[in-house]
Structure formats: structure tokens, C-alpha cells
Amino acid sequence: MSGSFGESIALASDGATLAVGASLESSASIQIDGDQWNDKAFAAGAVYMFSRAGQTWQQDAYLKAPNAEAVDVLEES
Image (cartoon, rainbow, N blue to C red; front, side, top):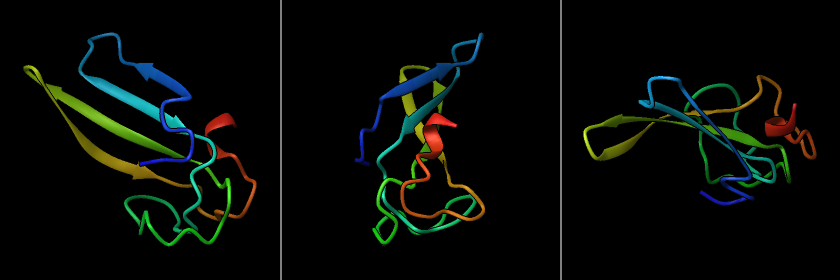
């Protein structure tokens, strides 16, 4: 996780689901749970989804636009 990870966050009202934006994340993967490490689309952006169980958070999903391209800045859309 990088690319300004945590620049924006949203917490569900029950406190059990967290969305974390990373506007400068640079993977060119598309849609849900693609390759986070291909780094071929500078600042395409991404959103990471987490859920909480007790005191532990776990990543549930890695979200990208269906047409991720450089400088899309998904998290800010």
C-alpha cells in the first residue's frame, strides 16, 4: 500500500467497515482485487476496503476503476 494511502477515509456508521483512499496509487489493474504491484498507471488511484473483527482489521478488497489509466486519481472522484 502506498501512493498517498490514507489521504481520505470513510468509516461505516457501525464502525466495522473502513474505506481508505490512495489517489496516487499507480497500478494499472482494473476493478476488484487485481494486481496491486504492476505500477503502470501513475496516479490512477485506488480504494482499499477493510473490515473489523474485534480488535483486528483485515483488508477485504482492493478497488480500481474499470478502465484505470494514469492520472485518473480514482480516490478523489
